Image (cartoon, rainbow, N blue to C red; front, side, top):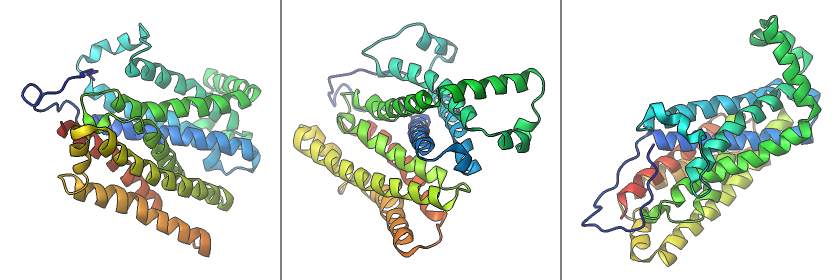
Length: 317
């Protein structure tokens, strides 16, 4: 992955800057999804003791490093010099979002794994095939992880929230620092991607077998996140049109009569926000059985948001 810092833009010199393919939006999506799961699982642990949680909720912290690894795999495919990936960890550049991001990604693994180990009960260890099959040193290592995590579970929950906020915001800041792209030159991309990640994190968790109270709590969080996401999207386009000059207005026009209008409004707004919001509000008010369709649509919308913004940002000048 090449970090580009260009602050001039001339149509005669830079007619097109298309360097990012599918790998980057997938990475941004999975990063935001991971951040949402980390925040929600940490909050859930503070509200409800682990013995009162469903097994799916107790095991959910382990989903974060797995999803993040998939995202980092996509990022690795985008790297131009793959054998030099270790160089991200040989230096720290305070002015580089990628440098900050690489260290944030690294710290997430111990934070989430230790929190997941702390949430495990003896019944989880004895009944889950993967854990039950551990013998010898592997079993001793798991026992040490559980003991270490349980001794500092409060600090781990706080660390998970802080790292998740940093990760979720970083996925938007990564684009926002590329000043040559008018569509990405917004301070709102960080908060927008963070809130979107919280929504997709709740959606992912609602796909599993949670108890009624856990599902209802996640749904309330999701409804609030969708509402905030609507507000941030509105401010995002207003900022582009009002403060971005001619280039900003041209970038905003891509979504209001331009080439990305149909796909943005169909996939992000209607499919990914309006429809699942209406379904979740109806479920909450009428006590309907939760439908799997709403979380699926939210995940589609979250991925589409990042995919479209990455592509449109490279198309706008």
